[in-house]
Length: 301
Length: 257
Image (tube, rainbow over all chains, first blue to last red; front, side):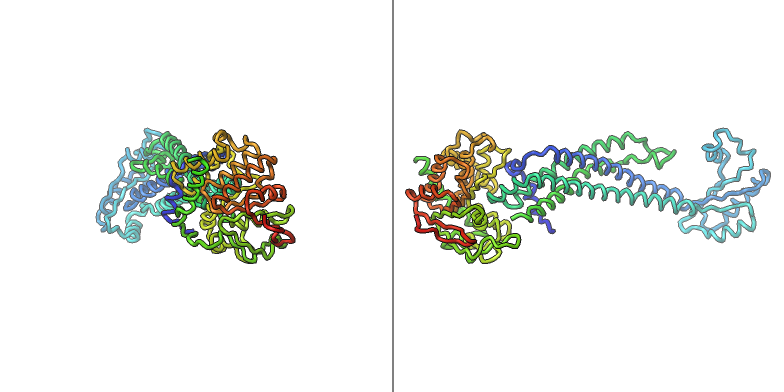
């Protein structure tokens, strides 16, 4: 159904008379406000989840892209020599911008979550890790592996592809899920408001009959219902968004540890995005109520 | 100017002043306000009315009689576009109801005041707001509307009940309020369905008198009633045709009054 702009403005124009012709209905009013509020609250979370997933995917992509790790496993006594040899090979490899062996403190920090602090990594048969940074053009991974296999059999090149792809894919899907949730939330809100509007229209059948009898047009009759439901949805969504923002604000802030769980807060200008939710709720309520009203009125003479 | 004369004057002005001249649906003004040509109406497989033809001339007064269930209410509903005939043609102000869209029907109803026996009101609104409802839905000027409303409520003797809610009114008061609501837009036609059905004799005479006065102001009146005493009482005041629905058809019931 094509909704013309004039019809929309006419439908939303303030007419105290049109608003008063429909008696106040406490139940549907409360139902609509509550539904809009609850859905807006959930929408804020879905939005936060979606944006956080997007950030996460982006961070992982940036952090892991263009980097690789060379792991050298050898007896402790041979490790420095093999490390030096590996660094030399890497420095001779086209496409490698930088290669740096992690110092014992950095290796200890990596192992700390599992073994605790003060681990004597120097005296343990812990592989030496070399962080490799690529140039923009990148290096020939297959060629480098063959050379390493020939000269340093204990060296394993890990270009992070194995980790990066599923992580980025998972984050991307999480982001998509967030947006899908938002669409579903607004779809559900529209369906529930349609049901509430249908209930209100059925409860006011006599009012509609009287209005038709005295020459009211469908637009006039629908306006009373549409304005009421639109305002209720916007009001409920406004409260829901405030509650949602407060809840998101109370979540732990982003940190280096467990960033999937702690990075759900909005960041920067994203804090303003939830403010669009009441507007969207009003649009959904307008369309749902108008559809319900015109459908019911169209069935009457 | 006495209130009744002012009402008449305003009714005349509103009628001929072109209030609906911009109405795209109703610009055509034929010789008859409502026309029925070989109208039939069927419902649920059975034919309720058949071969009805009638032309309501402006300023005419008609009674419609017939036994209960004969189809008087159905006939009136056909006359204000609440029902679409299953056969034949109904024309409201020269427009075939089948050609009128929903807004067109709504605009036509603003020129036809309808009074039902059960006088449906919006029970949550005071009497004054119920009576002025047609003004509100047609977007009339509020100041002029207030003046109209006051005079009309005085005329039907309800000015002291302006703030009462419809359920608080007596049967006679409800009928007068329904009549006032039907008149507030100064319609060309008044269709009344058993307007005296729920009131005592004295009140029915008062309502009849109001309808006769409206007819003298040029309004076309049709009253559906099974109350023959009301029809007899009217003959002293007005020239009216008495129609009867019998055997699904419309007949002229004896001599005109």
